[in-house]
Amino acid sequence: LFPIAGLAAAELNRKGRNQGSPTNGVKDEDADVNLHPFKLLAERHHPCVVELIANEAGVKPADLVDFEMVLYDTQGACIGGINDELIFSARLDNLGMSFCSTMALIGSLSSSAALDDEPSIRLVSLFDHEEIGSQTAQGADSNLLSTVIRRLSVLPSSSEADSDSSYDKVSSADSDAATSYEQTLSSSFLISADMAHSVHPNYPAKYESDHRPEMNKGTVIKINANARYATNSPGIVLLQEIARRAQCHSVGTGESSLSSKGVPLQFFVVRNDSSCGSTIGPMLSAALGTRTLDLGNPQLSMHSIRETSGVYDVEYGIRLFESFFKHFSELERKVQVD
Image 1 (cartoon, rainbow, N blue to C red):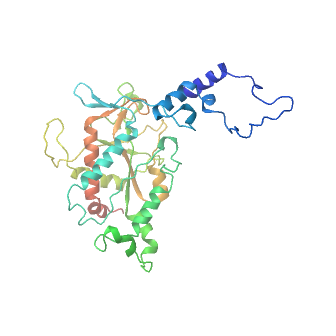
Image 2: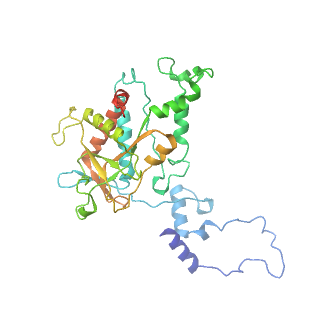
Image 3: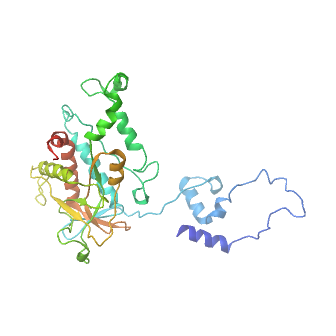
């Protein structure tokens, strides 16, 4: 809308082509001094918009060199539904799973002894631009994650050195250093957490009868035979046991203590006559060669200006990821693939 409005205003207020240009072969002495490779901002954009941005920045419109502007919903998120069981917010996809994973990482370290016997590194990586292909410096198709893992893979264990001097302790003569990165990738597990589609009550026929995820009934494991999702059977077995060990508040009881009843999970397979979206899971799995599983909390109205998800699924997601951080090292060696 904004570029169109700007072009319309420019056309209505358009000056003559030759206005202000040298005539009769006479050179303008100030032409070189006042040369602008681009038109002035007030000529490229509507003057009212330029003035508005200048006022917000506390400067004069003439002092603006350039700007980037994105329009978005400024209304805050809110809780709704008959029983306050729904979340209405912009950008739940994928701020929802980003929030769950970040809070889970923090929660898994609540005890001062959380990492005493931990052989693994707990890591959350949040990327931009997934909806436009991820091929940016901040996207999942960049080398950010691989370079971070490569640097972490050569660090000594916590029992050998403290973090302040760990880089100094790395010896080039270490026989394992040459393949430490590859060994790290092969022993790691990646969860690609991206919001999932809940079954729409007006269009239930769009879903397989046994694959209709519902909000507030648990995180959804995504499966696709064409590898649009990276989930496979060993990953499902691992996550099932992790979900069983998760500690979660009893929904609807108002209890403050955690129980060990686990958290629910759901499956989703898209109908074979429908196209299937994808996530950064297959991309990272192919680039890193790391075991990967795709999942996400269910939601409605994905990619709209106002999205809907379940309140209880936030709790389920946090507790699931927290259990993953706490129990992965113990459980992953028990999953045997014949």
